[in-house]
Image 1 (spheres, rainbow, N blue to C red):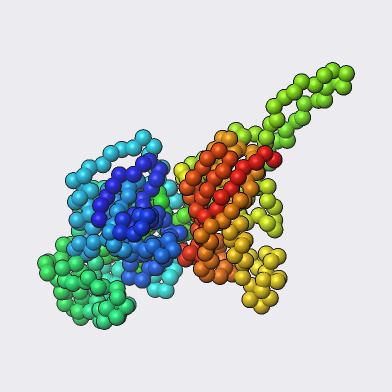
Image 2 (tube, rainbow, N blue to C red):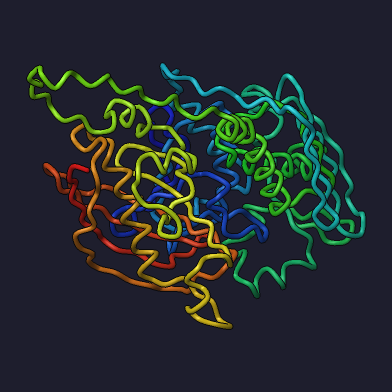
Length: 441
């Protein structure tokens, strides 16, 4: 595993250098695919398991932009803590970037309950975690509370090792969850005995490791958090649910602002000139390219109103509900597939499935938005010319959220070529390479 610097505002992401094309998965909660005993991120067939200890080391040190390169589907386990990761980060050193990331300050309390787990986060000027941990029988109950910052992280949390109870080992082995597990990288609790190759590093090492996991899982919110997290019997699943609730709270002000924003002022037409006077020939104007350029840029998200300003399509043929983000030559958008879609009436009665060609159309529409970043395409129409390497892998049904990711691979003059992939819950459902041509309206 290697830690590499990354540009400002690019966030934390994992890169699989052992796979063709070196695919990347961003460290965001929407890419969480599994939370059984650890946190797994994935995009389609690309998976990265047990990311929480690495993410905790990065955010614990105050790092907001980095690339983690891996030559396998899981980071090295080391000694079951984040100590080794924290050490190499400290040796490498940090550089302050010109565009700092603004921490998110929790505005209202959030509370969740998942089985025996209770978690909450409250407004707080710093980042504080208070945690109580124990097994289902109440054994080895421990409590710890800490203001987390780079200094306390390195001293009070980074050394805490993972642990498990002896009676869990058979289940973990049978399900392939601890293939590299040993007393070199984990603590085993058997009855009242603690099995370890060295003395406990902290009196409350078990609960401190639970806090370490919370720090790593909350990194998937994409921004540092300002709040007080209170957890009772936390789990990776509950950590992910709390992170999702935090992200929803982050997005709420923007969504409300977009919902209640006034419509754009109508453009007043210049009065017609008298017929007696010759009308000079003027260049044709096409729907204010400067406005389009201002919308289609890095870091923005677009609501349905803004999407409809860019695309000529209208329901029921508009296949884009929202653009989540635009980053360089990449764009991510979503389409909420509801039972009210008109094509479900005949495709198929009693077994509704979204037609594959409409998923292909969604890729083309999202590609058209991305290509409008180029000034010469602003205000024009994107004509769908061709599709290659089209694959439909899984059915899309009512209630699914179709996530459409498109990367521009080639652009020359009026023609652009892009690779698109559609996901549902992290699984690839369709993919294609599309070519579009831009023409005047």
